[in-house]
Image 1 (spheres, rainbow, N blue to C red):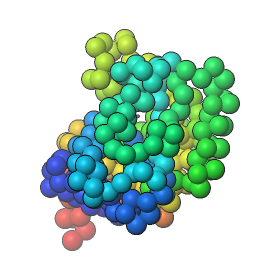
Image 2 (cartoon, rainbow, N blue to C red; image 1 turned 45 degrees about the vertical axis):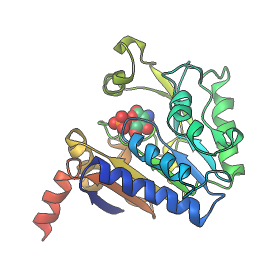
Image 3 (cartoon, protein in one colour; image 1 turned 30 degrees about the horizontal axis):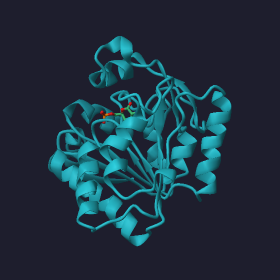
Length: 249
Ligand code: GLP
């Protein structure tokens, strides 16, 4: 696990955008896994600027998103499908047929999950997976106690996640209670992982992810055994890591 501590949110976003841009330049037909949430927003904005300036192109790449709320259609402004269109897909030159996100309206959930895994496999697997982290240590929507063996599946959201994500809804009651998410196994099979965390409220979770026991209690802790994972945090989210490094020195 590589740890990079950026100065602040802007610096973190710039560094993340550069990693993704670098991947697109080295391998234009790359397969990216992307995340939603507030953390990657500025990174996506910087990527749209780079695409406008023709520094990068998404024309040949494929993008698979981590997760989608169950029961929300992509036309619903609260859905992750809508989020991705609004913040990235409609603003860069990616082909719509090369963007993938679990279908939140699927009637046969097991079939939808299997089909999503098949699509990832047929694309050749994910080259670079971008992740955020929930306050409870979730990645994608893999909440504490998830099986590390799970592929894409239906998950029940934790109360803490519902509370945290209610910032995107008018009321807490509107937040869906379930979602379809890539599983830990899907995420671990990505060839590279870049996890972003910003702000002091993530500091303890980031510390547990990096130095804690590898355990489903903190799903992101599994990244300690990924062969090519980078954790990119700002100083606020990394404050406990720095304390630890000072101790070691
Ligand atoms: C959601 C998403 C995650 C994301 C997390 C953190 O629950 N499913 O993929 O990483 O929120 O979000 P934020 O970046 O807003 O803190």
